[in-house]
Length: 311
Ligand SMILES: NC(=O)c1ccc[n+]([C@@H]2O[C@H](COP(=O)([O-])OP(=O)(O)OC[C@H]3O[C@@H](n4cnc5c(N)ncnc54)[C@H](OP(=O)(O)O)[C@@H]3O)[C@@H](O)[C@H]2O)c1
Image (cartoon, rainbow, N blue to C red; front, side, top):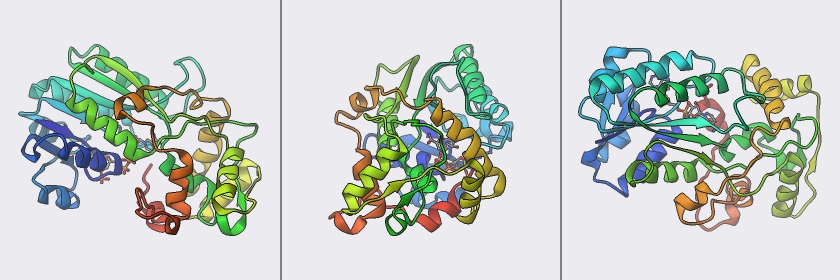
């Protein structure tokens, strides 16, 4: 039995959907704080088990009879390490053999970190290394799905991409769907025991490059314009983000970009998928020009995307 935590979230749900193509639903379970939110998965035969990262007893109960767990990392602005520790300890107590953890790409442990995220990722990984459990650590790049949040909903209308980073920070974006598909493979194929992978796209891309891609797609100039972090905060708040979250993006995340935390490429995602990952251009087309493609692979409804985002 494979259990995926965060089954009501975007990565967990997508991973379960890919798992359904690989193993019978009767061998799959999802952890949910609110099982009602996972009704669609339950309707497909996946067992939805109630559990909260902050409630150790609920975790032990949910993990009984499970062989492998995908621990979808806890959201930012919470005590992530305490929550991950609960899941890992509960996995041990319940007799789970293998925990797969979704960490975040980083350059190395001594360089700049995303505050609140990187430290808890490193500590969680150390906990797994010493837990006696079989582990797999997946260090994900930033998913492309977050881009509309940064560059804005109306880029094609305004003709301006307005990110804050000073300099030419570059990222190797990958789509969350591709990462979910690769994660499903890691959970079902042999050979991933005690491995650590960095999953990235293929091309380091700056915000100026993104403006270039959007210009090609829209057949009109879309320019890249830097603003001060303060002006960027104001813009993000205008899209509906709370002030502290906007400040976190404008200062912490953008600084991580600038310092190249997500710029390295790694061939593992392509290897796991057995194909090239979705290109950023194709992803941007699906978000900003869905009418130009026959079948949408990953449409984003921007207003509900903003509403649903949790940090
Ligand atoms: N690589 C990237 O670009 C990137 C970007 C954003 C986030 N992340 C990380 O990746 C994780 C998954 O991303 P996502 O987009 O799938 O996020 P998401 O849609 O917000 O999903 C988070 C999931 O975690 C669950 N959860 C939160 N707190 C919990 C708790 N105390 N106990 C049990 N479940 C809990 C949520 O349950 P509810 O439905 O009940 O809230 C939801 O199912 C995030 O949590 C974050 O650590 C990575």
